[in-house]
Length: 170
Image (cartoon, rainbow, N blue to C red; front, side, top):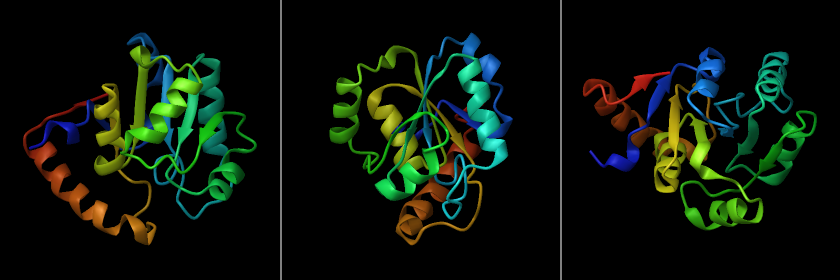
């Protein structure tokens, strides 16, 4: 199996992650995917649960950055009341846009952690950036049509990851 598709950690969903433990491991910046990681792709405003999570992360002094492949109107509308940095149309797993974002915003990757629900985008990008990544189960089975093929590959890689016990739970 191609090692760039292997996540560092696995959790069922973002709400089950022990962020005190994440903090104790030295992580300071969290790159968090939006669709099917924080919320269903069809929910346009953050739930109380997401707002509470983001506030907790800020209280723990994490630098929270939402990274999404979705379009500006979707990401901007969703994030407008969260008071977090966000970037849309990132084109994960390609490095060109994210490298520019990292450079322009002086983001230190030495203590960054990525969190997302897709092997082919979130995990692959994090490994290209040489940062740790938590792979989550998607929050919903309903997904955007554009993710159909990546999800098929995702299922294949998840089976291998689970069978070979290649990750640890955080």
